[in-house]
Amino acid sequence: MVGKAKSKKKVVIRPPAKPFISGHLWKPPTILNRMPEPEGVKHMLEMDKDLPPKIAEVAAKQGEDPEKTCLKIQQLRDMIYELGGCEPHRMDDDYLLRFLRARFWKVENSYKLMCRYYEFRENNTDLYENVNPMTLRSLGDDNIITISPYRDQEGRRVLFFKFGNWRPSKIPLTDLFKATLLMLEVGSLEPISQVVGGIGIMDLEGLSLNHAWHMSPSVAQKIIALLVTCMPVRTTAIHIVNQGWVFDTVFQMFKPLLKDRMGERLFFHGTDRASLHKHIDAEFLPERYGGTKPEYPYTYWLDHLCGNEKVVHELEQLGYVADPASEE
Image (cartoon, rainbow, N blue to C red; front, top):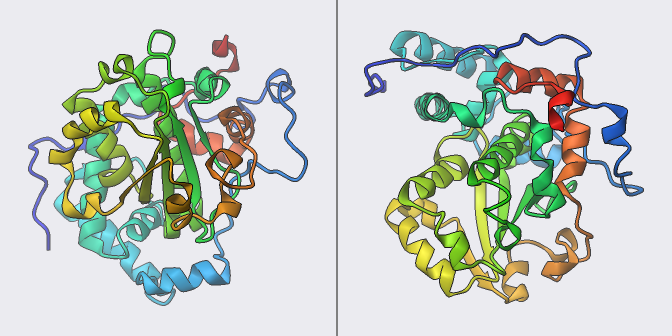
């Protein structure tokens, strides 16, 4: 049995400012009509609870046993009540299931993850509360961040970052965190992603000293928390491409924060596309990285996610706001 959380106060998530109202969506037609989706491409979440056979096999290897699912969920729920290290805003089976899958069905580790998750939320309320996802469209317009509408050979979503396109004078660093966090929260809704996790490709072409000035040890810690230690969806690998000497300098801040297992998830490829293809098949990569796929902007995801009532409900429970008028 794990001990109580070290902090004296419980980590409590405040309820969102507005309750969910059925039909109150972020999808005004003027937004959805801005960018027609390419034929045959669907920026939609796969929220079917029944896992595809291949993913079910992976889940079984990770310790998922349908006959013990209810027992494990109840054990986690009991531990939360007994130890009181956090007070989740939800305690239903589907929600607790995310944390169990993220830690391979080890109840104690799942409880610790949940405590870290809520501690992160409490310490970073500005990334959640009263954040309107539609105000983050500029990150898609500038092609700074996006996520693939397809999955790689292992069933994982691919999150792309192009930090060289980021103009700090136009877009604050906080918005990059908000957009990344939004994608991770949304990713945790997909049962497939709960099992196989996701991967990130950080394209550092064009990274300059101007970008480096905005990095600090606290920023590095927040990045590690988001991608490795605090979210109920695993980032199984981070691939660094097109890096140069500026990154080598910035990376010195990260090294002391990386435990051995974290370091094992980092792969450095430079401009060697063959090296990248050893991990991600070319058919699941954009042409920019030696693949066959086109690039799709972040705005496709925003438009469709914010038009999904179930997703809106989930996000509003976390404190996001559904107010299309505030986009302007």
